[in-house]
Length: 414
Image (cartoon, helix red, strand yellow):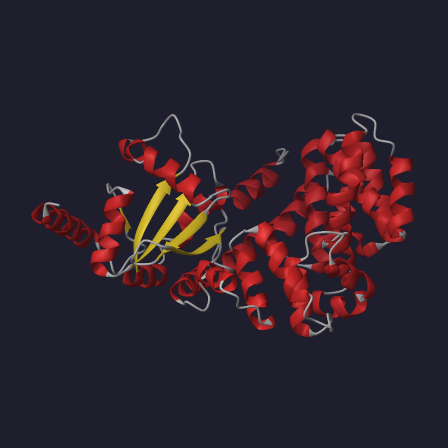
């Protein structure tokens, strides 16, 4: 091996990284380096590596780049503790020279480290060993916490996995390992670790286990599903009124109802599906089928049936949907249906959401529906409230103010 050549390579890399340092700004990412040279630099400096594995089409990836990576507190922590790198794992027509030069490394990273969702954050030890994985967009404080976990051997996911494989299986360890698998989006391992942890537990309604089960329950066949079903009041005390049944219905819908709907093709036999689910899960199963109908009609643009089904569920059980659901349903009607009956129903859903939570987004939906219902003076009042709430929160008001201007001019906003 040519020692002088290796030394020159390392010195050149150090020089390029030093000139890019921006301690007073956001995260400083290394550019123009191969994966091999980045690992060599990490080993030479004995510094961890943070890798942002992203795609050009990923919305949460773009959110992080625009809103989180540039923050000073984030930059300070990451620049002090990591060599920061980015790898684009898709290919796009407009890729620049740097992205194209990384194609081979990006393909290797996606394949070797099984990157299946975006953004994925990979953390490597100074020796180039993968020690931790995190996923998804998050706010600055949470993002820094994720990075702190990557530096802590007691919280590094793959370090914990190696300890498990070596035989460590105390209840506390299994719980931490399962939660780390959840954060790492390792669903197969999550099922294994969760099952082993729950097998050690006699009281599934302790505060710690309620928190654990609401995060890790994925199947109607799981112990967590049965615990929630039998102890709804205890879980609602932690999650909020009606939240446990909403959670259970989502699982039934996803795992049991939708496969039957798909099997029915263009004409699902709703009556037969409802009979089957009611026999297995009682009223919970019947409501799960009705909720599946809501999303089926929404997806297929059958607005009259969509509106009628939502109305029926709300009359039978006001806690069927949370305010976010109601807001989303109301907005779908606003954008897609001009029928007066549908618009009036959506207006009622939207007002219910606003009454529960004065979210600027909820107020914007309500204002738009009022305007569509020719109640423009009221619409202007509510849209002004939405703009004011955003300003108070220090958020961008551009889109809401454009809508408000159209309302004042009597122009359509749909």
